Length: 351
Image (cartoon, rainbow, N blue to C red; front, side, top):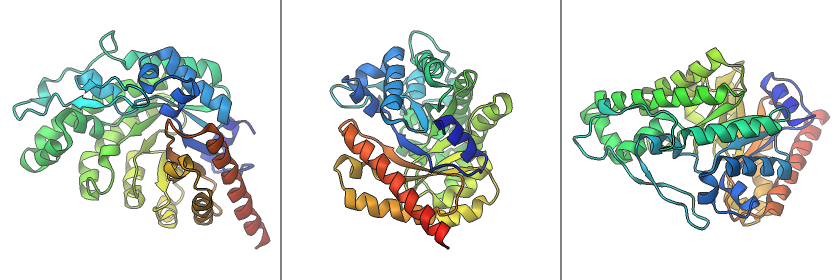
């Protein structure tokens, strides 16, 4: 099966030849080009080339386009981003709304222009779609509304505002969700889906009630916009940590793909999902791949495979593959997922 056929079948709950392989490749793509993440992140041509080179190298079943995946929208709003020298990934160095007097109502929703990278990443996605869009699902990477707000205001300030001035928080989230919705629709118009990264909303940085109030409505606005207007693969919301007790919120926001690491209770998530067509990406610690901890990875993969036994909407994955990870190690990890898949299928057939 071609990757796109395999993922279409998984989305539809059909049986596939093996569970798809979906590693998270961002700055690792820059390594494949022998360039720094900073250099690649500022060129539509290089971002696209990195994503395509990754696909040609690993033949994974879902391609993500982006390098400094949390920064593009926040930077367009006015956050300062570092250069990302050497192996370092560009990161936010200044929060423009950190001042207590800052008024989110005064924020202007940025449009793509030469002063930001909103159009640059759209161009990169277009190039990837043109080159490999008939073979594989393509996802554009972007910061989620809550995580954009955390970068603009500063995380501690944002949390404090929830107690002292919640209307201010919602006003800021209204702005970030508007930009996220507009940017997501630009990607979707090309045929790409979106990864909404909400790393500032992970447990235990915030708790489930906070997630329900300040994350769900704004993610739902973005997801609803692309689902209503475009025929694209299911939008994803990605954050680290144990996502077990967020599953009801993912369902409420219309999320189509979520990450579940080795700590997650996949059995509980399966029960809560029921017939809702959500794909679960079972993820391992990417640092274990980087340091070649094959024994630990084998144990982790077998555990995930046991938890996912009989699931149609399951894919293999890992957190962000580092710049330093050897391509040979990532290929070995792919082979290990196939072996774990084969073992659990053989066990199922023997019952």
